[in-house]
Length: 239
Image 1 (cartoon, rainbow, N blue to C red):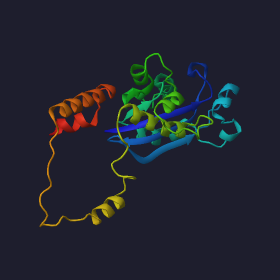
Image 2 (cartoon, one colour; image 1 turned 120 degrees about the vertical axis):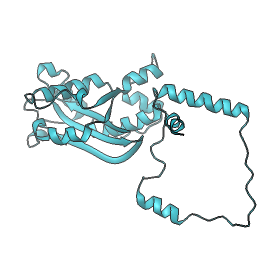
Image 3 (tube, one colour; image 1 turned 30 degrees about the horizontal axis):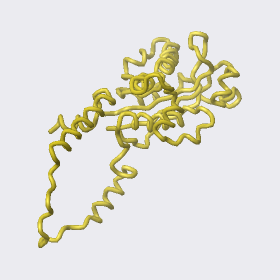
């Protein structure tokens, strides 16, 4: 399962009023593991950025003068996200802006939903924590995720933080290896200690019926929180 955690920064709040995307940040998950692969680009919007928006993300008009336009990066960007599930916090905002950018390309591209599916983590968080604050900062605090570097909004940093938040609220770990590299796996395999053939078999301790029942209840809780994407359930289905 390939997922892309995505965030954007913009010149303002409403694409219908001519506001544009000025930064895109994405990180890739495969089977709920961070791969280290990402996409990041600043964009020239051909318009001024609202002062209120600059206060949020710190990106200035001067900084974007030599950056490419969305039309320049659209093929590369769409190839990166194509056929993935997009993980977005407050998805209607980002999807609306991306669809506006695609629309401005005079029919070269269809709307985003033609190429990807979308999961809104804000909707998911509100289901899990009704009546509570569910901003990205609030979720970081609730799930003890370090966002100390987030003094200003930035698309790539926010995408990286959102990936940690998404994995936390859906009950999964990021990797079975520390960095997922083939070198680490090979080193671990090389260092395996073989058992002494003369050693007696280890005693197998079976779980009690109560422990099995508790385990099943926990798996079902993860299944509900992940909206049917609990990795343990998927593995059971392959048996």
